[in-house]
Amino acid sequence: MKIIVHRGTKEIGGSSIEVFNEREKILFEIGLPLWCMQNRNYDVKKLLPSLKGEYSGLFISHSHLDHYGLINELDMDIPVYLGAATKDLIEFSSLISNSQIKIKKSEIIEDRKVIFLASFKITPYLVDHSAVDSYAFLIESGGKKIFYSGDFRRHGRKGKLIDRLISNPPPEIDALILEGTNISRLDNANKETDIEEELTTFLQRKKKGITLLMASGQNLDRIVSIYKSCLKSKKTFVIDPYLACILDIMAKYGKFPHLSSKYRNLKLFFSSRITTKLMKANYEEKIFNFRPFKITKEEINQNRDEIVMLIRPNMEANLKSLNFEDGTLIWSMWKGYENDERNRKFLEFLKSKGVEIIREIHTSGHADIETLKAFVKAFNPKSVIPIHTAEPEKYSNIFEKVKMVNDEEEFEI
Image 1 (spheres, rainbow, N blue to C red):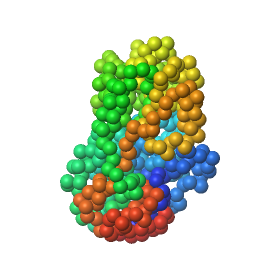
Image 2: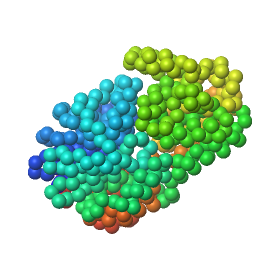
Image 3: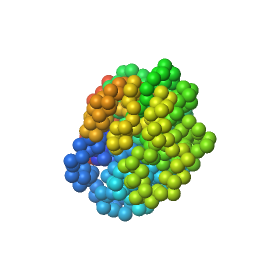
Image 4: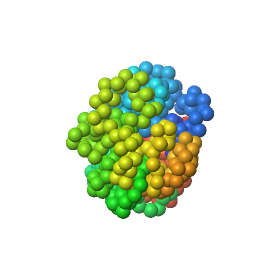
């Protein structure tokens, strides 16, 4: 087998990997670089990897744009292999963001259910990550084995998936393509359950004023942590229609809180921009079904000491009439997102209203050094190939048998 890492050997995000032999080619990821999400003045055509010929399939590990965001630019009719929940999240996100991403041919993958694709044998492995339904992949062909880690961690709510993989890894791996987002961080990551406890402690101590939160609506581990901390603190968790729809979609995949009589401390604030967008996207019936769980601005103001409210920049116009006295914002995302112009302006707006900004109650969606070490030790590969990292040179300080490669460089295993 041969490998080309089209992008990702020296940057976090925008990953794309090609694996091929004399007969077929397959792709793993076709991601949008992270910098494009902060600076939207880019020529999307120039971001495409140099793909040549026909491909038997494209595998998407999870529902983050830096792993699938260029899929619309592929000028080819190619089957896309991805998890069922990932497919649902991509399609919903496309509606909301106006990205119009379309998956023409989809094939649903499942944990450890083998896929035979021409001369390749691919086994997906469900892993722990901040995106639900995330996968790593074992690729076999011609007596050779490649394991692509995708994005993963061990300190989330599904950490046992990584424990299981480390305790019984696939044998005789020729190349381990390993993400290294946190390769330069020496500290161990906080567990998601630690975040839940930290949030709970904060909310139990906070007696006055509204608590605002900024967190990714697709980081369902974090949403569960917020919900559970609200339960323990006897607070009402207020969400927007975007998150309400995501939780409604995900309810069939697991025990996620969602708008229903079962989750009584979960309420919905109908922010105008996202509600209008959903109505135009033919979500009228769903919006109507959400109405019994509505909370108004007046109710939020009257009960602000007991309110925990998830907010985002497109809600600014709706928030202007809220009472922010003694209000606090908890930033529960990666610090780098503060550099996004929309987030920066939104934080300035909140500061102007007297809101205290707390940075941060958060943990990474990516493996810490100890997990990376345990992963490599367990797999004992013949070579370790850096990806999804800004500092590939640090791999050699930590692991043996590191193979340094460049973007668009072809090599054989």
